[in-house]
Amino acid sequence: MKIAIYPGSFDPITKGHLDILNTASGIFDKVIIAVAQNSEKRGFLPVETRVKLIRESVKDIPNVEVDSFEGLTINYAHQKGATVLIRGLRAVSDFEYEMQLSQANSALAPDVKTVFLTTKPKYNFISSSTIKEIYINNGDVSKFVPEVVFEYLRSIK
Image 1 (cartoon, rainbow, N blue to C red):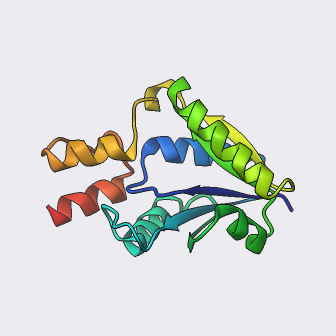
Image 2: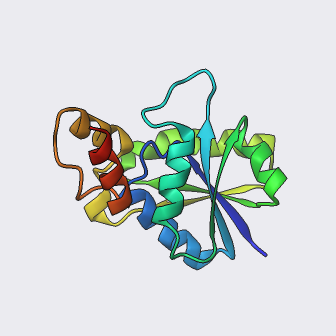
């Protein structure tokens, strides 16, 4: 069974993230969306909330699991028996950072490969940071996030 980890903060998850996930779920037997927690850093949404919203957003994709982890992604991948890390690319500007990250991961664990997947062009500009900025300034984020995320954000305003 080919297991892939799709790690990230997903704070919050966007339609661009889901686009990458849908592609990955068609390639791999199992994809685990792994929400990275950093006890030193406070996120926009609590990790438990992100996990819950993601689970609801992916409930119709049978080979996808949602989890959270702390520490090195490579260590988490080994714990889960994953041999692939999924990284999403929206634009060329993402590539340099993602390439450095994949090379560091490869140096730590040559047995775990990184696969880069691109979003559809209509999602190129969507990032969690952009969503937060729009939301904080009372803009409409409904076009950019799954319905469950939009409803949650609306409920806490």
